[in-house]
Image (tube, rainbow, N blue to C red; front, side, top):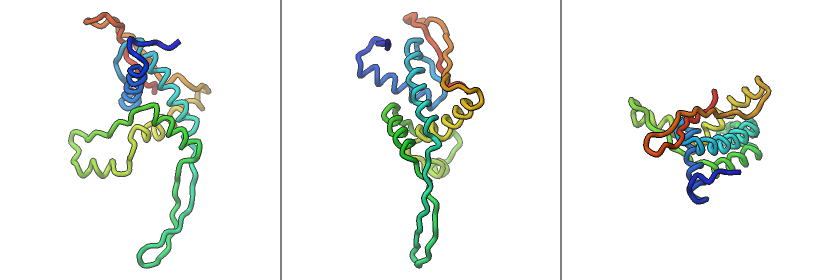
Length: 169
């Protein structure tokens, strides 16, 4: 049975969505134990969906002609049907976070680095996490177990049990 977390349904969904997005972006967050358990289950579903579909791509060759009339052939790699569907589902399950400029990074360098990235969190899920956990699944023969929860003890103000949730390497 799902925990109510002391808020109504829309607030609970928004809370879990925000914390799942932060966990996937940063790799580690600190929250209450009950919230951590809910977020772990939520993130597990997201990563499993990505792992099962990340390799579904379609390559097509397109002939392009330039201003002088010279024709060249380009190979385009697009998402397959299953990966596109999974990407759309995951987009509804998380809030997309924007890339942050590095401390010593210049503005033109930042714009050049992030020019081709439209949805940074989606790219991180499908380009980093999905291949990593798929290879882990092949090596160990098990799927799941993507998160780890460390209990820290009671919080000083309200004595709520605090925990750190992180993605397993």
